[in-house]
Length: 442
Image 1 (cartoon, rainbow, N blue to C red):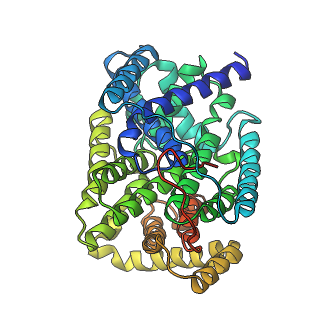
Image 2: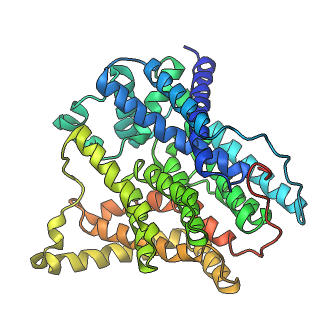
Image 3: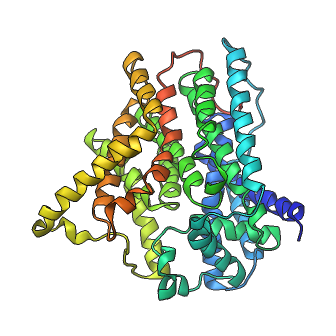
């Protein structure tokens, strides 16, 4: 199987997933731009495809992609019966600053191409891919089911059997379309996730602030090369960053208008987020807390998805113990040991780790001081709380807490695309792009 053939199969699988997601996301996307709808189609499709694959291989191991495709057709047909596809509307024309918008989008496109070519230049090779995400995905793809040994085999203790499974299931599903496991071709999924991140950033900010703000967010995000680099192809970081942007956009829309379609988006985005990484449950929980403080009943749209997700995982794999954390540190008799560990970790984060990125951090602080409040400022309290929770988690590590801090920079970078959303929302509001299918896309 050549790379070209396998890559064509992977792209075909992505298109099928997006088509399924499009048929469903239209039900709650009447006020979204075209760019946003494209991103929601991908996220919803990956979520649905992973769920269908898990169900099919649990009922009929080794069944192949045929049952999933049959269920895909059923989902699409049902969605079309519920809400037929409306006729397309003309695109909106550009407004003021169109030259700057095009320049920023060109920068974003060039940076995205850098990640695309670096991701597919060779088979995925990072340690986390080989030991965790790729191992599980290849095991599911080659055995035709989700074997119990992924969760019970003590020799796979280092493979983090407690992690969510959306990324491995997505890789396994794409491998079935490619006709086999091809590490190099499967890497295409990750540049596509970055592209979807850029689309939703542009579409949301064009709708709520201005197209210039959306283009600026795209450029800043695409230029985050420490996140979008070859080593992260095959891991959960790039899809997780995408999910954080989606759930932030849905959260901000709920604050603006609590319509049934907007609440449905918040639920879907939350479920997608928690299904990728454990940190997603933490982030969604902090957003739910923000809504509860405001006494907003929409908090249930953030609370229910983690409960459903972890309940489904419990049914699939049974109870799983965490090897990374020693929660006995939270007992009062261990507080004397926990406090110095926490301040040691915090000092490392604010010292060594922060010094590495001092220039962008200072630039962000200055920018926040000289700009007016924006529609996404409510997120600016969530990001530091997420970082604080990371510091607490490192403090209760079962191993050396400073060794655990080694992962801080990698997981903190996943917050950057969502941070650009909050930063660029502070730019001066212009003439927003029209909603629905009439809105231009990048």
